[in-house]
Each structure stands twice: as C-alpha cells, then as structure tokens.
Image (cartoon, rainbow, N blue to C red; front, top):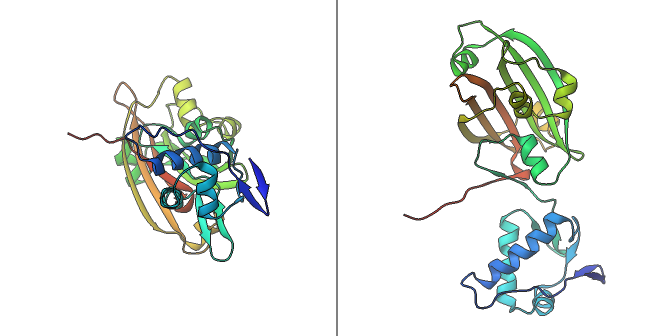
Length: 252
C-alpha cells in the first residue's frame, strides 16, 4: 500500500466471488478492517472511485456502494474538491452488559480516565428508586471523564451503594467500575438500560470537545448482581459523532 500524488494506492483484495455476500459488502468490510487496524491511516485520502475500482479488481458501481456504506458508518467522508478521506473510526459498542472501559480494551484502544468527583452523598430520589434504597441512603457518587487516546469520549455519572465496595480515585483511573465490582464479588449480571439522544448543553459539549449544540447519546442503566442486589446506577453521555451501537439480528 503506497501513496501516489497524495492519495493511497490500495492493494487488490481477496474477494470470494462465489459467496452470496455482495461484493460491495466484502470490499467495505475489508476496508473497514484496514482502517480500524490502522493499516489505512486516519486522514489518508483515497483515490478516485474509478482508480480504486481498478486497484481492487471490482466494478466502479461496486466500489461506489462500498465507499457509500463506509461513509454511512462514519469511517469515510467525502469532501468537495478534496476527495474521500479516512476518519477516526467510531467506537462500536455491542448491546451487551459490558462497560465502556472493557469495550475500549477489547477494541485495542487505550482508555484513560479523569476522576472529576468521588464522594459519599445522600441518594437522590431517582438513584434511590433505581437502586432500591431507602430515601436519603448514602451512595458513592462518581463523575468521570473517559478518554480514548487524547479524545474525551464519555462523561459518566455513577452511583454505587456505599457498603458495597470501597472506591478509590487511583483505582478508578486505571480500572473500569465493572472491573472493580467484579473484584469485590459483585459482578453485574443483568441490567435495565435506556439509550436516547439530545443536543448537548454548552458545558457538556465543551467538556467533550464538541461544537456547541452537538448531538449527544444518553444512556441510563441500573445493574444487578447474581443475588438480585442493585450494584450500580449510571447516567452517561457520549458524543454521537464518535459512537455506533452494534446489534446482531436474526429472522424468525
């Protein structure tokens, strides 16, 4: 893979032309793997569709559909007068009971956490209802800013029953909350989660290095351990431009 007049020259891909999987989807999948692995670097400019089609041994319509698919997935962007550029891949999160820390590590990324608040406080009405605690019961309240590399990718607020586990700021910098809960014998086993979206406030977008009014994904979650005890309430926000959620679906 080399550069030619500022654009990447891609090597032919090994495609299965006898497969029922459409060629454009195979091309898009292999390009996505190269982008996410760093083999095709962020900021690289791809050549013209006709040149790419020739390089990869597919038709121009197939190449066009593959590029459009990756544009829709947020991996490529078309810029007038410049061409098609590679974007920083979005974090794809499975719809499973995992933590952001675990998902980043699984994706081969390096998480970094800034603990902005860690204190014992009386639970709010929302938190006490979610955790099944008496009104005003004490919880450990966390506010963390999670980074992937240099980019802030989540502002997270969590409440944990104060008698469940002792949480230390140093531990929260280098470990995920679910990892600490597992170590304390309270691994989350089931959760109720709601995902939504809204414009960010000025303070939120500034914290997440987004433009004012940018769309944010929201997530609230209550998790229980194997005994049925509520172990965590979370309210998180994420820059919508840097995320996608992945679901595996089957027909009836």
